[in-house]
Image (tube, rainbow, N blue to C red; front, side, top):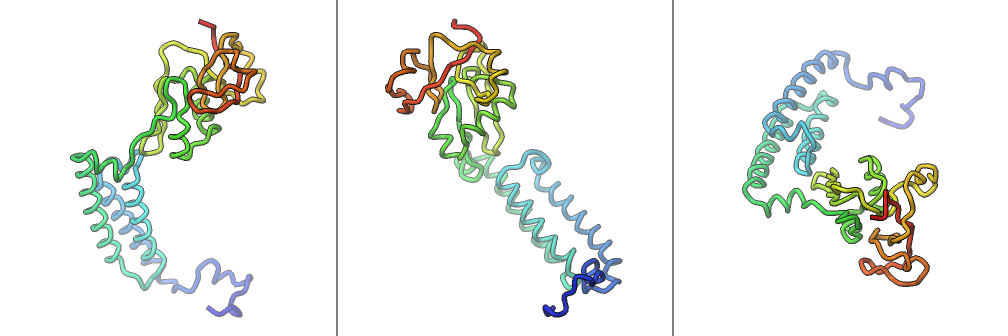
Length: 234
């Protein structure tokens, strides 16, 4: 279409385009066939396609979407090519799924491994940097899980599908606060520890005497300290 043929007042072009009106009747049949193709394809690729999908499933869904979108929009494109593409995607997806069940190395290669972001109330800064998880994002996730201090966490896993899994400590312990620093009213519900201070970077606890010194954290090497909040000084 030439630039001079484009007019903002041309509602027929904007709403219908250049396709003949008869194509809208054909479009109903095309949409039905594409819908059936998607349902059958996802059914053949397994139940994981209907739950939290991993990288392989996401790639398969994206490929299917790209394949079936063109015949819906262009009357000069047939439906047979996306059917062939769907068959190829299903074939390889089933092979990959079978291989990941039988071979743990192949599963790690295609799905990635889980990462431990917090271990015994201390953040693993290297893993957070590798997985591109910021301190604020991690704290937001812990707040969403109903926690108020890092000391309540035994393990926080980042699963291969991007979900978080929490293993809380059986007994609530002291730790640096995950509450936003400006929310003093809520932080007042917890008492400041007279025994410990915490490394601002990783959350590891140190004696209170560290707080006003340039001493460095034995875990991450930082020298920035913050208050430790908790339920008691036990």
